[in-house]
Image: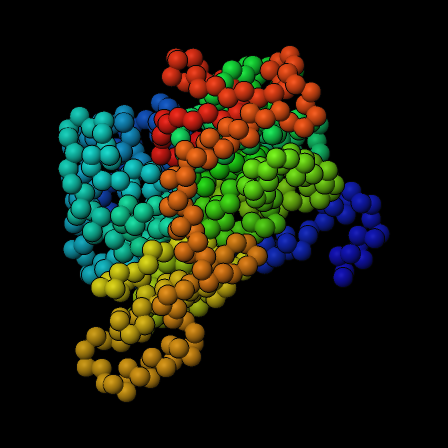
Length: 600
């Protein structure tokens, strides 16, 4: 090929700087996107939050500014959309309808259940829901083309769990949940499968990134993996305490196995037992305090960012690493199915490395598997980083030129618009028909993630979801139970029309009433949805036994360790000292429960 021929006349170093085939593909896709029009309508008025209801008086979970909180994607989502070129002034010209809500700010303990002017948060949310429900565009499809973004896990909850810190009491949220039961929700994970159906009240999920913790001015993403500034090979810092969840038990088992990686920094600010504090020669499986500055500095110095699953499959540190130019190592089996954003638009297989959880649970551990990554050639790692940097603004909310809000709109249309909504929109206006034709070209990488909950037999809004993305398997088709799915009026339909449409649907192979195709990155499996649901439903039930099993695993001396040694190395001991008042400082796993909803 021409590119290989050109490389033969250049040094290896200069060849490595030439555009790769993947980068040339990215250029082509960017050219297509520059011509794309995806009209959306953003609600506004006295019944809608303009950013002043809650954000002006809210703080993040750790006291940071609300826009720095890892769950505050909504802040950047609405800021980007308010000035976006796709925004239209008339609902009749829109394909999607955006409901402005600052739910993470509204549900923070700092606001104590009320807006900045003292109004109960649920009163304001219900007013928004009532205003939306009264519109013609909502009534047209029962809100199936309406989009909300909120990464707060509190969104899935009902009183009294939703806002136990409220000083003004709690009110029922059934009106809000019922109004937006068919909506498209941008969330950090696809909660239609990751959580019980009772908590996932919305129909379709689009994965919304966490807000990254990094220093934009440092421009660390420009440092090549082989540069002297990247003197940390593998980096992990986070929580690994005794929450009693499967994810944290997994971290407790995994961290000791990584302590001998050369030049690594593997630490936690909450571990059972009594490890040494990080510092000097001790930099792995050690205790480190919470420090945003230290975290940013270490991530910027790291070649590889270890993304270990937490309470749930996803983690903020994926975005922290992408922002700082560290190469992502994904160690979370279900992340591909419920936690990676924009698989249609981002070539995840080419910008991240994936390691299964299973090796960490073997007697030999996974250190050799992880360590092998650092033996890849600098040129190969450099190309991977360069491609990841190309898609950096597609994943990072808080970077200059971010396209995350735009990606959410595209993915919402590709993955979540029911086919009958698409057909009617195309028939309604020529401009919408043209936009939909162009949109079909915007899933070059295929998307096997789980997006939708199964539609209720009495609710047709979820039929034929995913029709726009040709490389994406359809999720649902309600077949004959929902005449709306075929774009036909519900009455005055002849039996011949019904038969013709039923035959056409089957011939097109678009209706899959029971089994749906989902899968891991390189395969499709008709039973994948059931497997994911069963896996996640059983995970927390098995947590106590897993904790005990992994405690034994992490408590074993590693092969060739030679017993104990100074600095806390050698045989790992499990200690249940969290109840004693000591700071968690240990290695290994210990049973216990201090449950918190989401990973850090």
